[in-house]
Image (cartoon, rainbow, N blue to C red; front, side, top):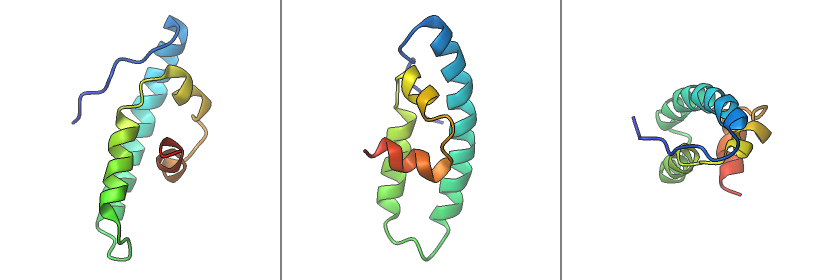
Length: 80
């Protein structure tokens, strides 16, 4: 597993965001692995790049503000 960056923000936000990030990354990894096996998805490099970028998101506020997005939504949001 990739080493995750330390989150930035207030102590309270960091604690909350660590929980959100852990759960979201777990489910997003499952979704990405499934999509990597899908022959209909052509640009797998873009998919893995988005997931790597998601793993490096260090803002506690970002994780809190996007906590209601599903796995695809998170991958799209991190690319904005």
